Length: 177
Image 1: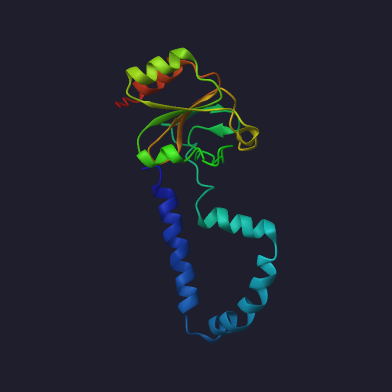
Image 2: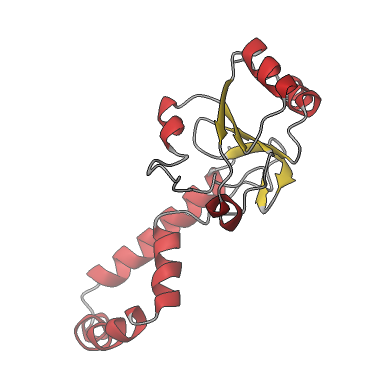
């Protein structure tokens, strides 16, 4: 449900672009043959624009913060955000566990002992990553809890990974793991 608005915008913009590119009128032909070849190299020389286009096309900027299902904030990451990617010191990254396509908890730093027990009780995989400065740069908070949805988005974020708040979140949304 939360992705419908984005899907509608994507289809509409793709449809407009396709219509423009395939149009056979003299203005469209002039635009394709004269304007685009002159303007595109100038536009792509801008690092900021290249980054914006990459983030737009790759859909990295999409978030679901407005959806009532997601909640909480820890560091610069809110419930509904895509989990930030972090390269770890051993050459791996924090996205490797996402290949399971299961709900999972991430803690960047130290997880509270009570959180370990709750995750085991709820059959929720807990991934604890030793704290590194790259995590801070990515917007993650030290020792915070991030409940990750199967699609790689953060459902719940809480500074100080308190088991009771995670339990309440799961129960309120009837999430059975």
